[in-house]
Length: 457
Ligand SMILES: C[C@H](NC(=O)[C@@H](N)CCCCN)C(=O)O
Image (cartoon, rainbow, N blue to C red; front, top):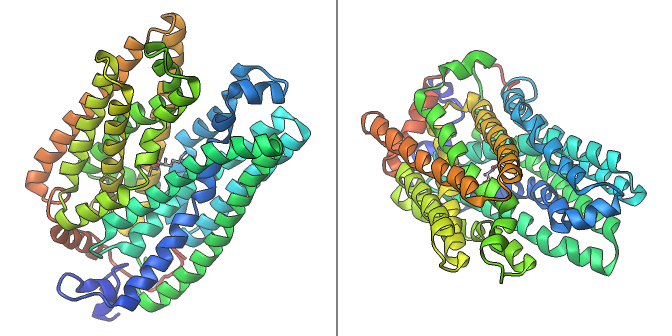
C-alpha cells in the first residue's frame, strides 16, 4: 500500500487547498455536482407539504374522510422515521453505499408519490396513506444521503458551509413553491392533477440522482480515494460517538422542535392571538422561516469566511428563543418574530450540519446524519402529539405550548454553551474555517485503509 492511500476520502485536490488556489475547472465540477445534490431532494421537499397546501378542510372531504384522519398523512411519514432514517444512514455506510442508497431512497419517494397521485385519481384514502408511508421510507433517508454527498464532495474545501446552505436554500424553495403551485394547479385543473404534478417533481429528482451517481463515479475515479477502509461500520459504533456528537444531536432536536412543530401548527396560534389576520396571511406568516432559508447561502458564504460554526449555532438558538418570547409575550406584529425565527433558521441550517464531518469520520457519516435525523423526527413527532393533547385539554391555551417552545429554545442555548466549553479544550467546531478543515483531515487519517472499495459505491 502506498503512503498515498492512507488518506481516506480526502482527495488530492483538497489536500493542500489551504495553501493552494483551487483551479476553476475543479470548482465548476464541484458546483455541477452540487446542482444535482440539490435536485435530488427537490421533489421530496416539494411533495412533503402537498397535504398542507390543500389543508384538512379541502383534502378530508375530497377523500370522504374526517379531518382527524387527514393528520395520518403526516404521521405515517414522521413516526416510522423515528427509526427508519437511522437505519437509512447506517445502510448507506454499510449495505448499500452512498450511490445505491440514494437511488433506492429516491425510487421510494417517487413510488410513494405516484401511489399518492393514483389514490387522488381514485379517491381512495387508504391508498393515499400507503403512498405517504412509502414516501416516508425514502424521504428522510434521502436527506441523509444528500448531506453525506455534500460532505464528501466539499470536504476539505473552503466553501463547505456555502454548499450545505445552498442545498438547504434550494430544498426549501421546493417547499415554498409547493404552497403556491399546488393550490393554483388544483384551481385551474383539479386536485389529482396537482398531486400528479408532485410526482413529476420526484421524477426530476430521480433523473438528477442518476446524473449525480454518474458524476460521483467520475469524481471517485478522479479523486481515486473513496471510503477505503478496514474499519467496518457497526451499529454499536454510535456508542463510540463522542459526547459532542450527541450534544449536537440534542441541539438539532431542541432547535427543530420550536421550528417544525410551530410551522405545522402555528396558524391557529397566530389567528387566536391576532384575530384580524386572515387564515391565508397566517399561513404565509408561519412559513416565513422556510422562505428566509432561501438566502441562507449568503450566511453559508460568511460562515466559510469566518468559521466558528458553534458561535453561529448559539446565535441561532438565541434568535429562536427571542422569536418565541416575542410571539408569546408581546403584541408586536408577528412578522418581526417570524423574520427573526427565519434568520435563526438560516444561520442554524448553514452551520450545524457541517459540524458532523468534523466530529465523525467519513465512513460513519451516514450513520451520524441518520442518528441526528432520527432524533429530530422522534422529537418532532412526539412533541406534535403532546401539543395536540395540551391544546385539547386546555381548550386551546397556547401559553402552555409556547412554554414548551421557549423551554426548548432556552435549553438549546444551554446545550450550546456546554458545547462551547467542551470545544475550548477540543478546538474542533468553534475555530476558524481553516482549523476546522484541518480537523476533518485528522479525523479521517485515523481510519486505516485497505483495498476494499465496495463501501460507498
Ligand atoms: C437540513 C434539514 N433537514 C432536515 O431537517 C431533514 N430531516 C429533512 C426534512 C425534510 C422535510 N420534511 C432542514 O430541512 O432544515
